[in-house]
Image 1 (cartoon, rainbow, N blue to C red):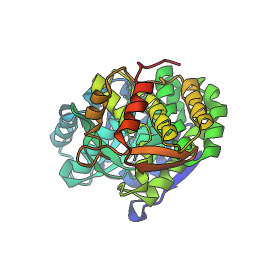
Image 2: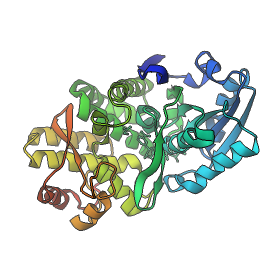
Image 3: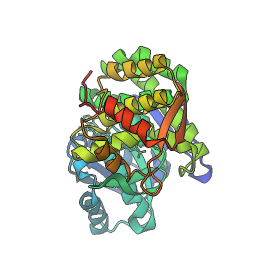
Image 4: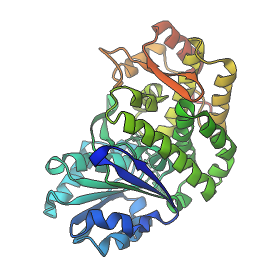
Length: 364
Ligand code: NAD
Ligand code: GLY
């Protein structure tokens, strides 16, 4: 079992990564002992792993309830959030209660936001069950929901007390979801660590085949990078924005298509191609570095281009990005493989990138 620490002073926590992490009673018992616990999951994941998690919790918690949400990105909204609040209230959960989020990034983001706001904030634990959630969304404390006009537009920073990333859960994950998770794995290498990207490139085939050693290495490596960035800049005053490489374009694709049409990781895959193309046009990376990143995205089974919308449509969708200032988006760019920065960019360069890369998603 691999452990990564997220160092945030009194909000520090452990990410336990490995086969059987859902059974780590030693780690979770101190958080749930004598308290009311709600496992928040969805209709797909609860039947698969709910009983396993409940068995770990039941010996220490005062009681354990399950809140089962509808599945899908299209349900990452207010009405699903209300289901969590209503279940907690109906069961008289107090401020000492704990939420354990069991599922992918959608469940984690909703359950985390519920924990951030229920009775002005209660403890929560992340038990991520997708590759994407294990390498990214369960770590760092960003929680929230979508609005039709913009992705993740309503939310809060609220760190989990613990993350239990059980690699065994990835065995039941559909291949398309493994590819989506690889987008964030590639992102971490591209923005922060060229050696990690090289290791990931070597492991893409074993990861897609479900090899647990390769999966555990990818999760541990990504969590180490994300933990480092978050420890420097918990609330995205600066550095943390690099974690959004590919996301300004990607979020536009997700909200423009309607949530759930493309998976988040697929939109980020195409968005990273656009971000790398823009970096190349601005003379920051060379053609070889661009081609290398595109090859990794293709090998992961991700789209290499976005929907063929007009540049005006993309620019309109991107004007509500959280990095935008008075409607003008900023972009995460690559200065090299393993080194990212955030810049405002001339609009004609963005238009040129869109003309080259918004040509309908090319499946690898
Ligand atoms: P998801 O939560 O929709 O999960 C993908 C699908 O896999 C769902 O149908 C889910 O029910 C199913 N599933 C989950 N675990 C499974 C398992 N072990 N076996 C079989 N099926 C399983 O999608 P995701 O890719 O995990 O997360 C995407 C979300 O994460 C997006 O909303 C994105 O905005 C968010 N996100 C948040 C952050 C953050 O920092 N908070 C970072 C990245 C992404
Ligand atoms: N996924 C971007 C972040 O956590 O900051």
